[in-house]
Image (cartoon, rainbow, N blue to C red):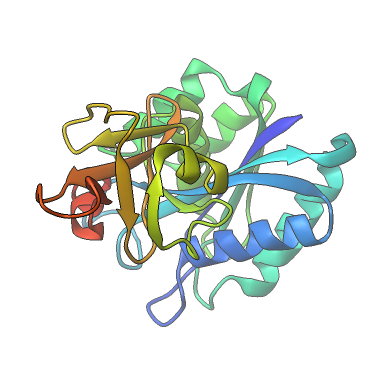
Length: 246
């Protein structure tokens, strides 16, 4: 069964950040053969002087296929990992939701968390209403707000950038679309204007690309290169990807 695992507020100014912790959590779940990991994504939330956050107020989600439907073991592993690895002084929150439990109200919570100050009390009320696991683990336990929001945003499928899919960070070189699809699990390749590219196009991947989630698809954004170059497109630079996901 497919689930979304989401975490928030696990870092401090000296630590590696919530995104890094989400990737190590995902790796541990696969290593322990508890779940198959589809992808890890980052979601930007509201930045406001009245909202405590470390640097960017982002949360992270992990889309997983739980093996043997052993969700209790998955939750136990996630809880223990966050209790052990969350940074000192953080307010870590953990949310685990089956796809069939994620309602329009959860999606709405995620959207509101991008522009509105929300409360942990209301986060728990909504999670209880929908039958979704939600727990604050450290500090003031306000991480439940962002972790619940990340579930809604990832399920809605039109927010965030991808932190991990298989082969993402190791991938460099020039590829046809067919070759790229063989090594990287992406659903779409679009220009900066969100237009498709010709099937015969070649794409150069420089450093590690940063796909986004758009229209429920893991989408690689590319930009046109000069006409005299041996490839037609290159993966869009991180500055552009940040500008459309933060």
